Image (cartoon, rainbow, N blue to C red; front, side, top):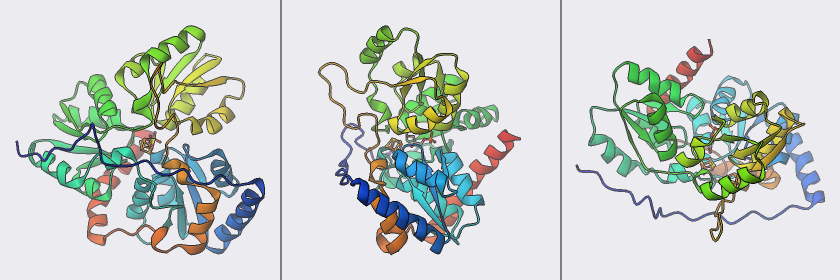
Length: 348
Ligand code: 13P
Ligand code: SF4
């Protein structure tokens, strides 16, 4: 084994400083300005469910999209606008740029990281892959362009299980990265031969079993829906497990009138639209004596604000525009296109 090991327990990243809270006057000012800038730049907003409700509302109102990471990639790829404003985290903007090199891809801030992406540096990951040359490399979309370029396949949580089942049926052995919880979940469900990178999501990894059990005692009739980036003990109790879009769907399908939701709480905005008569409850991220760092909201998603969206549309440039080395982009496009083709086949 020649792997350069990554220190998972002590990853070297800091959480961002919270952005300033805007007054109602400032919000109105930026909302009007953004609508004007979207028109003049022929731009559209593509937002993730974890961005703040006012951003999701704005994306809907202006003809953009609010969705999970797979649909964000598909929407950007098919929508004719010249400029894509991606409100989410950096890997989402990079995916949009790799799929649409001819379009301008802007982000409210390029500092919107993802703990999964940060926990999978290319040097260490490459070395890990080189130690297992007989394995197919499947990486989650929550990775850098370089890690994608090293992979055979990119996938999002909404089709990860189906893809691994397919590859396993072909007799392929797999490297999965970077999320250990999603990797373990898929391994358990598919019985595929998988070795797992040990990254984790700062939001989902914090859901706590003991506190959840207490909560279930208080709400005995509530259903539990869980994103698969959560720890196994939480997934084991779930009535439904899935990507953000699949969780919104499950909220509708499940008979429960109350639902405990183990994912970023910003999803409540869209979920509540779909189930207006159900009560949505946040799954606990801190047990007795424990503290939470993310407290069920992604600290990097929070950097998307009306001000930073307005600035990015107005100023563009090196603080906002995604640029990727063309050779790297070309290499990362291959596994991304495989993902989109696979998703299309599943749909049909
Ligand atoms: P989805 O693909 O389910 O939207 O997940 C993206 C993500 O970052 C979850 O933490
Ligand atoms: Fe990454 Fe977790 Fe934030 Fe999703 S919620 S973007 S996985 S840190």
